[in-house]
Image 1 (cartoon, helix red, strand yellow):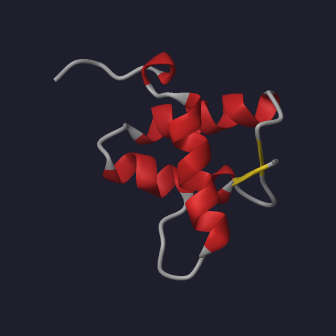
Image 2 (cartoon, rainbow, N blue to C red):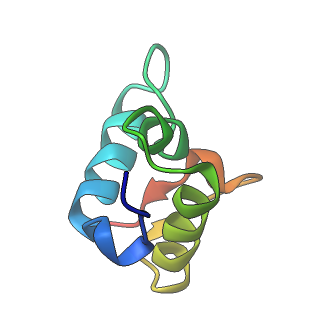
Amino acid sequence: MATVKCADIPDGHVIELARRWHAQPIGSLCVVDALIAEGVPEKVAYAKVQRLVRRHLLDFGTTLRCAWPTT
C-alpha cells in the first residue's frame, strides 16, 4: 500500500465529511473518524483537518476530531 499524504486527500471530500457530521452528529462519524474508516492513517487525517482549519475552511471546538465547515 502506498503512503498516503495530506495532498492525496481532496479538500472538498474532507469538507463534505465534516458537513455530513455537522448536519447529523448522532449516528455519523466525526470527520477524522470517517477518514480513518476510509483507510487514511490517523496522523495524516489529523494533519489534513488541521490544515483546513488553518485555511479557515473548517472550525472546531475542543477537538479537531469533530471539526465542522465554516461555510
